[in-house]
Image (cartoon, rainbow, N blue to C red; front, side):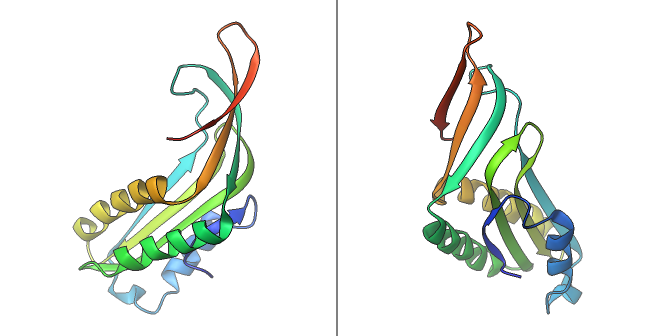
Length: 147
């Protein structure tokens, strides 16, 4: 399995990802796995009801950026493995959008790297979200968002 990248919705699962982490050559050194699962929120930053999200990416560049983040963070002391897998397509409320895993020798090695991985992919990867929401007057609206 690739240790980072963008994937069409339905082509990767959390269980597959965990199998990949646990089958890594250095996993025997791990004492903790941290997992971040980003899901579709049912309310926008402006308090509007969200119906669905559509995610697209500049795939080649997104794959490169996600791999680079994982490689960089994997070199930190006590970190065994870092994986970031972002899904693309149309998503309903509550559906998984992204999986980030960090395996560390100890929990104190893993937690800060997990947070850094999430913050970095959100800032650095060219992944784009289109939000479909209900406006203040009940009208359907859609807009590209960044957050």
